[in-house]
Length: 422
Image (cartoon, rainbow, N blue to C red; front, side, top):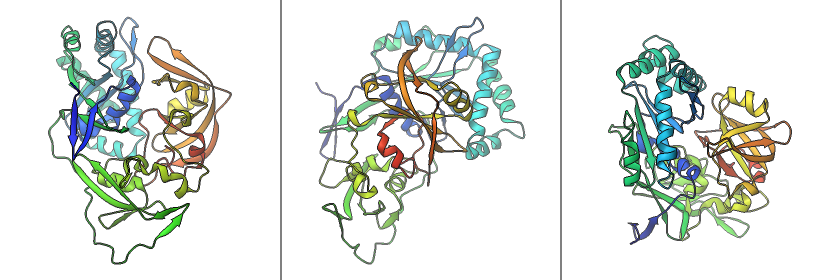
């Protein structure tokens, strides 16, 4: 029988992610809802080693500063060989964390990432009680965890199976298994829904979409390329239905409140969570997203759709040290999770430098893409040095890549902000 969710008459069928990269992206983008908005999801792909030199690269970490909790997150597909791949990888990390040098290195890596984000740094410093961030992480959290042997792991899978459960029983501490089931809307597979049990109970501070006064005057109709603006649009999110209007200048009005961009309106609708508004809002009486109208509003040469042949560019997020040492210094980037079917179409790689830069700043032409050791990930080699481009900045709380994302080269170089770039 088909596993299905029926939402306001629209059917969502159980969907199997094409690869681990796709599934990880869905989890990371919705981390605040899955793990709680008190959690800081750290998408750090850095190797740490056991005392005898065996290394592993986890998918990410959760940091709850107010609770002094630190959790390893491993995101896997249930089809992976759990006994040969998942269980040994988790066991290696647990052993690596017991290594004093690895704990120290991990604290330094996290300290760097925190200090690169002004707002995050201010939040963490409130919990440090006058101590430095590294000292707080290493001595008060990591060393305490090691002494008390209370290290936590969460393994996220798209389908909980008996095999996966059995593979985790041998580990100490035993990881928690979390099922995040993925569903795709019938007739519009790109629209996904997730089913999961939220991991932590709390009352989050939300940025609600507050209804404003209705507009007193009807918006003038603007006809562009045969499209009459404003265009009626809608979005569904967490059981809520939003309706609005998309204007010819790219602004969106929802409940009488005007937003400068689709992403700004999407962020408000999603309780303050940053989003790509071009794929969040849909055209009323249609199953298509407003991405269909991007070329008209932005005055670009073509309509950009998320078809495989259009996705010729990948944007990767980077901390400043990795950007300087690897992207510029080694003319390559690793270790990246990629859909192998998309690799033949990739021609360019761009880098999004995290705070305080918060912008896409450099672009390189891809020479070749090869498998990176035995990690299941890839390394991208450049044709010469990356070139600096007009900085595409994150504005008004817009999209900030937390994992590799695909886009189109023409769209990227014409983008005015990171939200426009994807």
